[in-house]
Every structure is written in structure tokens, then in C-alpha cells.
Image (tube, rainbow, N blue to C red; front, side, top):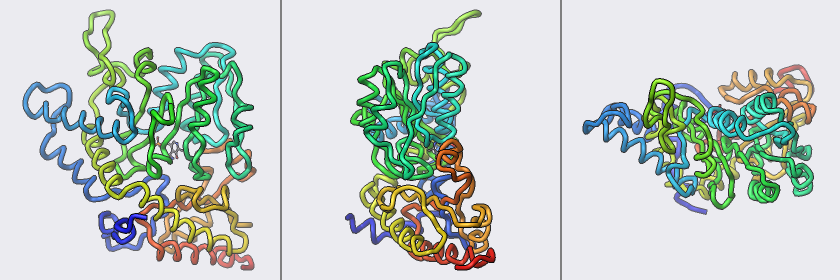
Length: 410
Ligand code: PMP
């Protein structure tokens, strides 16, 4: 355990908690809060380097380009990617996954090919593949999980066939919080000649990612869940795959030369970054990564796990409360999705909100998973390293009152 990590007051770094309003923010899986250094990095770009990157041949324009490209190199190191050209900036995870679906999926898949999608995918990693299947005649197949959210060896082996061409899997489910065995999946997929698309929206904020070690073909994440602003996201893709793909969006900045009737596209990564880019967001994402790595993933994880363990221990004692997924707090990445007997999740969220506790209630954009679990709707509390033990206690105390407030026994 990194003791520096334990002693530091992380909350002091986050301006939102300095406001004079009560707020226990437990919706970190929906979007994180942002530390001052990240907000300053974005502001710094606009105050000191603002020009349209890759366009101006004057000093400020070159500085703006450097700032943007340095952020790309920062993300490359964060993901342990081989080359900066393999990092494409997008708006978010959803756009990154759609890029792969429209560009790779539509042009590579044929009738009868199989697309394997896990049952626990967020709609953002399901609908693009439904679209590809509808357009190409490929068949969508599902990799089922156990009721507690485990993707077992047998299930993985059994789901791949020689016709599987692409597998789309989340590294961490936004409902269960468990880390899926991505290395195992890429090994089996590659034996069958399939590519693997990983949704890292919920994993990137919690665990170190090594795209080469995992041998993933594509991987996407959103800046806004990782302390960075909304509107900046990342797609990693293996160079040889990206090279062979047509552009997703076309227009300015993604070209080398344009004639009346045709165009030569720019090399990677710019081929996939049409139009003016979000350079301020990219700079801020670089700063967010610096901030996280300075704390260190180990310290971060230990802190999140200990807060999650505290919450889970108290939740298990509250009659009528049922947590989805593992019994082990270390297998949640801070995500605790639960139901309360006889009380609608929206009522649970409203009662918690009356105590200034922010949680999410609904289907969590994972309706096929909720159908499989026969849980139409649930509440999700998601914990970050800047939450405190007092906040967790206030949450479980408020939760313990929910059934009584709704007129049911304890
Ligand atoms: N995948 C997962 C697992 C998510 O939790 C989310 C965000 N809820 C997304 C994808 C979509 O992220 P975004 O809205 O930033 O594109």
C-alpha cells in the first residue's frame, strides 16, 4: 500500500466539493468529477495556445498542434500502445465504438459471419453491432455470463466458432464492476481469426491497461469517466487494422489532397479525425492521466476497494437489499448495483437524493443484461477514490431507512 495515497486529502483537489452545498457523489461510473489541475489544463490551452491545431503555420498554431499531439503521446504511454498513430481522439466511447463498427465492421463482415457480443454490454457496444449485422448479413451471437456476472473459460470457449469474425466485450461491466478476462478472450478469438473490440469505459479509470499485453485489436474509453472533460474520448486500434480501414467521417483535416471527384486521405491518425479537434479536451485528458498516475493505480485501487468493502459489508446487513455480482468487494471496481425489495429503484434514488446522495437508477443502458437477470431496473452506487468513509456510512445509513420510509418493515 502506498501510504502517501492513504494520507492525502483527494477531495481538496476537486473544486466541486468546495461549494457550499451538501453533496455525496456516488455516480462516478456515469461521469467522474474533475480535479482543478485538469480544469486548469483545459483553460491553459484556450488562454495560452489557442489556435486551430494542424492548420496554422504560425507560432501559436504550431504550439496548439504540439499540445494536441503531446496529449496523444501521453495517451499512448497510458495504454502502452506501440505507436502514437494508433491513438485516435473521438468524442467518447460511443463514438469510438461506432467508428470501428462503421469503418471496420461494415467493410469487413460478410453474410453468415458471426459477431460475438457479451450479454453484459452497454448499449454503446451492442447497437453498433446490431447495425453491422443488419447491413452486412452477419449474425449476432451472445456470450452469456453466470448470474453473478462471470465470463467463465467454458462459456468463452463455447461461444466462439470458426465463423466468429469479431468479438465485442467490455473489460468492466457498468452493472457488475467485475474485470473480465480480456487476455483469455483475445487468445481464443485470435485462434479463430477474429478481432476483439474492448469497451474500456469502466476499466480505464480503475485498472492499468496494456493494449499490447492484452493483444486487443481495438479499445475505447471516455475522458469524462477518467477525470477529464466531457467531449474527449479515445480509440486505440492496431496500426495494420487502422491502415486498412476506410475513414468513418470525411471532410476537413483528414485529407492529403482533394480533387473535384476524389481525395487522398491523410495518414494515421488524422484519417480518422475529420474536422476541428477537441485540443483543449485532449490537453486536459493528458493532465487527468498525469494526475491518476501520480497517485498510482495500486493506491487508487486499494482505496476504492476498501471503501467498496465498507459499503458492501453494511449493505449486506440491510434487510431487503440485494447486490448484483460478486460477494467480494475487490471484484467491483467501486460499482455496487442493487435492488431493494418492494421499492422501485427510482424511489430509492429519490430518498437518497433527499439526503444529498447522488446515485443512478434505471436499466443502466444494459437492457439485455437486465432482461437476462430478470431485474428490469436497479440502483447503482459507484465509488471513486475521492469518496470518504463518512460518505459511505451516510449512504448505507440512508439506504437502511428506505423500506421504512416507503411503509415497509425494516
Ligand atoms: N460503455 C460502458 C461500459 C459505459 O459504462 C458507458 C457509459 N455509461 C459507455 C460505454 C458509454 O460511454 P459514453 O457515453 O462516454 O460514450
